[in-house]
Length: 200
Image (cartoon, rainbow, N blue to C red; front, side, top):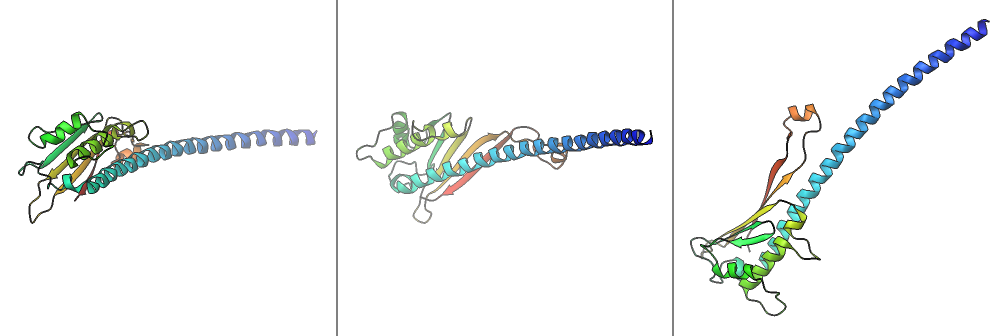
């Protein structure tokens, strides 16, 4: 009789241990799930920022390849204004006060399969960079709801042209918990901006 009573006590105690172990494992799994969500969010943010930097660098390379236009020596810029290009929804446009030739090149960009003028090449590069093609993703395809501006100061004999490429986009990363929110992490979608200074 004593042996049966002892066996019953051991069985009950073992069941309590199993329940406690399950609770601890469940809490640990919930923590791992939260950590995975944070990692995925951080990976998405890193991906977007890398794409922005690559897009800005690709336009800078195009500017360096077409110095005849972007350094202001082609005579297409207004001397006091320079040239300012805005990109919205994959469409590049130029302000009416500067670079009328570039505005025309943007409205009907050439294919540049033959020799292009510096202005036509700039229009082609900007159109490809903003909207992209079936094979090459442009800013509108890679970064949804993004805008960009390219602002170049006119050149002088002592001060070479300087262009600033600015890309704006929205990040969906938010604070993962109350501690992050208290530490200053964003609690809503954040508008981010990246600028690159280029001297063609």
